[in-house]
Length: 362
Image (cartoon, rainbow, N blue to C red):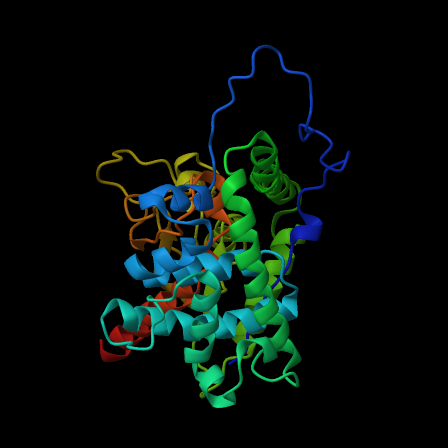
């Protein structure tokens, strides 16, 4: 299977003052500080049923096994290098499968009875297929010769430490300031990329830098199709969904894909705003639907109800199926969390199998 991942961020938004508009910590208050105690996911979890500081993950694992795996892997991957993230993803798929079996009562080795989070992680890793094959304890990280897996395990252990340290600080002004940084960065980067893409398209059409880069990878992916690997699946996150739709419907309509998967995207919103030349304004919004590119055989659109930058397509376009997926995060944090969740990959794989099998039997 060939995998292409076109990066266009370097020709997207550019902040002339290096994001200096971000409010620094410690600025004089305009009046009495009435700041809201927003806390964090970890703080909320620790407050439920009197959960102890070092049992947040363990308590969650008893109630929602998949959520426990997702939370742990999301925190671990936030500081991982590309190599570590790849290894974490592989281990995460194994952990997600175990968690789903546990939720169905089919995993007797699921460590929901662990006394604390440290024991939970140790037993979880030992229960994974790779851990059983190695037969080595956690502190040897499944064998020192496996450097990638060793570092991935260290990231997971670090995640436990970050959870433990974050719980008592939830709601503090310092933590709120730290928590706002990724939210601010996500929001400003998104707005900047939207403006940069549409400005480039208006000025240069299909030769615009962002459009060219993504279209080039789509064309290369089509060229790489073989009898053994015949299908092209395009997975587009956020602004990427808008770019791919614009390419396939207007800028490069000769391109195609078997399945288009848009995740946390705004294609429906952009269509409503009239930003796609291929989408005419509806005479009757209750009846008329926007066209789907002829080259798109199936369209899966995934959104998180807590993600304010994700929208549906089923009520706007002639075809396209919407699916709700909860990352367990709030507001802007949800927007960047889909691909940190092991359960997301399993559910996507299952949905792709169903979609493509239905096509082959149709």
